Structures are given as C-alpha cells and as structure tokens.
Length: 162
Image (cartoon, rainbow, N blue to C red; front, side):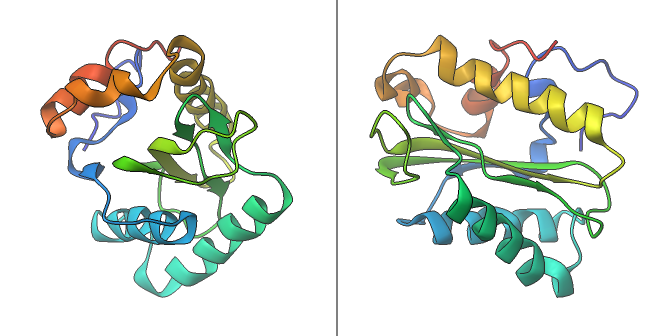
C-alpha cells in the first residue's frame, strides 16, 4: 500500500502496488467496474457487503455522464461513506472497453477510484493526475510497452499529479 506520509508527485505515487491490476478480464464497462471494485474489496478499501451499493452508484453516474475521457482512458469514480480510505485500481485491456468516450475510442486503461466524502482534495488531485494521462497521450499504442505491474507503475510514474 502507498505510504501515507510519502509525497504524491505522480500517478504512480498514488497507486498502492497491491491494487494495480495489469490485465482486465472484463469486456464490458459493467464488468470492468465490478472487477476493479473487487480489487478494492480485497485490499480492504471497501467492505464486501458494500461493494454492490458502490458499484450501483458508479453505474448510476455512468448513466448520467460517461467517464470515458478519451484517448483510450476511462476514470469511473465515486465518493462513498463506505470507503475506508482513498482506493485506486487500474486495469488495462488489450481489446479495449466501450466507456462511451466523446472521441469514440474504447478504453485501454481504466482507472477506478473511490474515496470517503472527506477526501475531496485527494479525489480532485487524483482526477487531475489521471486526466493528464489522457491529455498527454495520443493513441492507445502507447500502452503496448506495459507488460506487467512493474511496467504499468513505471508508465504511471511519467504523469504528474501536482
């Protein structure tokens, strides 16, 4: 898990190593959200009995406005009173997953996070950092060098949060 005393300078710094998922099995938006939330349950960010409630909140948000932000990136997220702490799970998809992005591109990286309502600063800081990935890349091929958790985290280390 990320050291809470460590300065968060890059997206990598905000990612606890045990929740960085390399390859999603999911093929749909709903499956990807469920798979990534499961990682947050396993690492203790979210109680198992609240997983469905939080998943439904994220899917309700998706129905209002897609979190597919373009350039192959999706950022499903929510604040929840059930989140024990800020939790982030990142998954990649070689085939892409339709998140309804404005540019029509499937998501090849899905970064899902939840946080307690009191973590507004952390929530916004993380959102800026993840969004910088979508702004700084111009095609999904950039992810081809990501082959495992370590290379995923190295890749995320290129993008500033602050």
